[in-house]
Length: 152
Image (tube, rainbow, N blue to C red; front, side, top):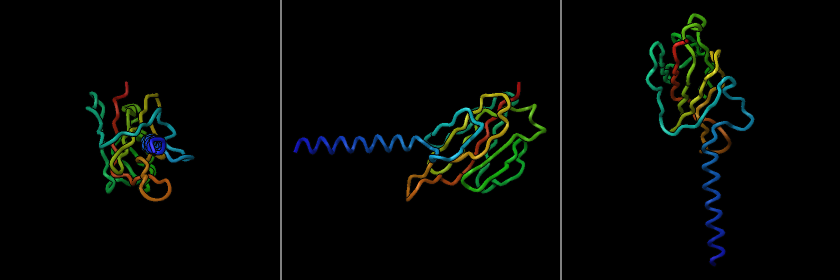
């Protein structure tokens, strides 16, 4: 009986560990996400842009306002509820550098980080994976925060 309980405990621990690892991964296998980001990370909760440095800006766009078009310095080049692509408008390329873009969906978010010069666009950013139901899928995007620095 002790061996059975130990085996069941080990199996439960492995299941919890496996689920934790899966929850930390946001990209569906085989999907091409965020081609230009230097990194992206799963963040629990509802993160926000930090205080913008002098000359920088942050812009939050709610899903109901998110569509292909211009939002001041940012152009949304694609949006379908699950993916969003963006670019800095040409008139602002000498003014701003991308810092982070936060894509919120469901109870959590993905933070995409940009550190290289010329990080002026990206495509196919998603919210975290939704593990409820059958098959891999992403949560719908609830809002996107753009956090940009002044160009040096």
